Image 1 (tube, rainbow, N blue to C red):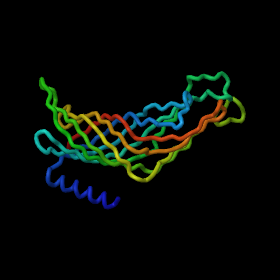
Image 2: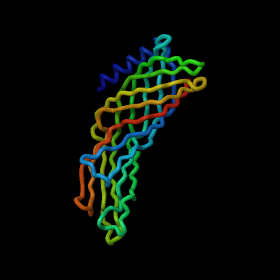
Image 3: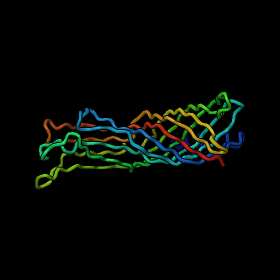
Image 4: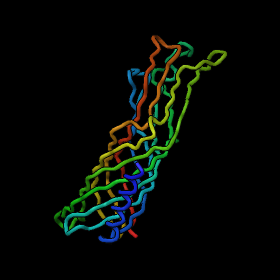
Length: 235
């Protein structure tokens, strides 16, 4: 791992010195990162997409008139939401199958690096030129753990009706691919739409239900995959 990082740093340094890269700094607004349950719990558990974001920098180099190269990194939070049907249990009075408890979580921080190549596309009628970028990279997730419970308190004492726990799956880096469309809307302001897909789960965990008919239990995994709006300023 240390050898890989040193080699990558040396390559990037050479590219900066030779090609005169332009620095861009900005943010991303991400939507995705839905969790997966195995086995599923039917109507008891939902896996909505979640918003999150990152701070990002990249170096952009023009190879020729049509082709360009980008490389950089980002620091962000891996957000996810879990929805549990809170009143579908034997402890509640007047069960409401449409009422869900929400469990948003944003305590997993990650750092990633990427390398992408792109080609510019000219549109007719004086529309702005945009670039289609394709490439990939690696992500490292910092240690995190969560343990959440939902309690039904219509009777005394309160009883746990749903609980889950999630933690980082491993300390190894995770690879991803990404595809984006980018353009300069005004001078020095680069915006784009990006999809990033990782190949391995970032977080793993388990869930349990209590006080329901045939209470289900199983595992939870979260693989980072999100659609992002990127907004960067060229310095």
